[in-house]
Image 1 (cartoon, rainbow, N blue to C red):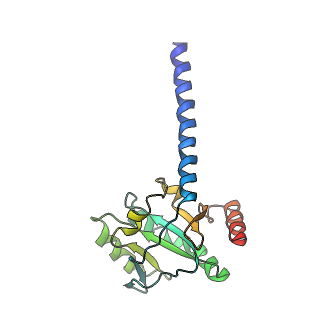
Image 2: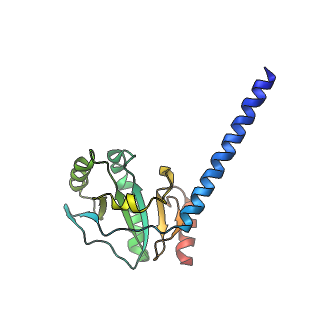
Length: 178
């Protein structure tokens, strides 16, 4: 009995250690990669959709909603991002790109909801799935789907700066160094 408990504890420790190692490796790969913000993203702004909102010369803070996530759930969180958009406006050093990559069966509903929402900043839809297809380097876990890209598209910060004061300080520090 004691041997079984000891083996179970050892297996849990090994599994947890492997999971942390896998995340570290995934993040290393991600930071070495280039994320392409494609020009096929549909930009929803003022209840219209265009393909003309991408600024190639700015730092980009990406908030990515993958097809595996609940798009309508994430849409309810958009107003919470407003301070990040306002920070981008006040600093003028980066732009925020909230990108939805809905599944085919969610696509029309997501598009309709985003247009109806009429958020005061542009929101993006991965219309043809190009963003998701070209950026396989992105971590799988949702908590890593907020990140800052330098002008060449390399990730330089991962996390939501609105999560807490420490994350915001770190985010501002990274922005100041670029």
